[in-house]
Image (cartoon, rainbow, N blue to C red; front, top):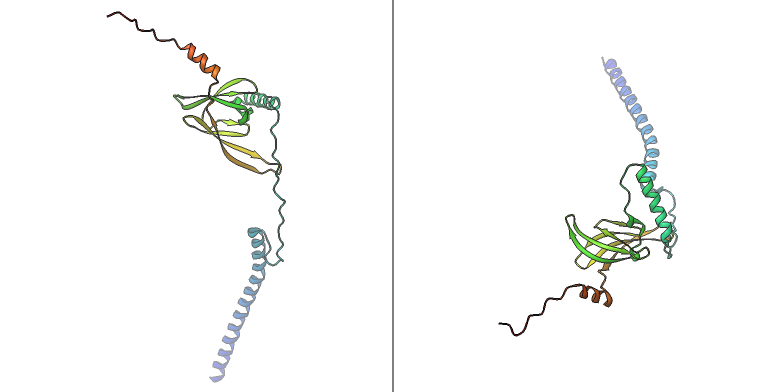
Length: 199
């Protein structure tokens, strides 16, 4: 009887040991696979292997030269090509103001329309006037808001290294020259003078 119970206990211990060994091998093989997966995920997520020596990333210095805009004729030709492509694709063409720089125009008037506030701007190189609304695009910026006596623009500056910087610029309503002021004053009819001596 003692022999049977000893044999039974021995078999149980052997069986338990075999199960522990099998589970230990499974854990070891899983642990051997996981570090490789963890390492690749760390490299992908962080962008740097945590076990390599840290190397300082040297960035090139910022460029101090701005990219100049092409001449007005080149911009007009580009606008015409965009307009023809839009007509061929049956979509709305771009506005003519997309060929103008912000410093190539003057604000000649601000008025209210059914669509909201609008402004009349004159393109100085080509002597043409356009009506613009907030959100209108220009070659180097965009009209953000129209206020009582000025227009607010967002200017985009492109540097030689590809950086883009945005700044706010305002343009005041153009004041009339003395000649224009005299011309408009003479165009307004004078009120008739009251007659003297009549009761």
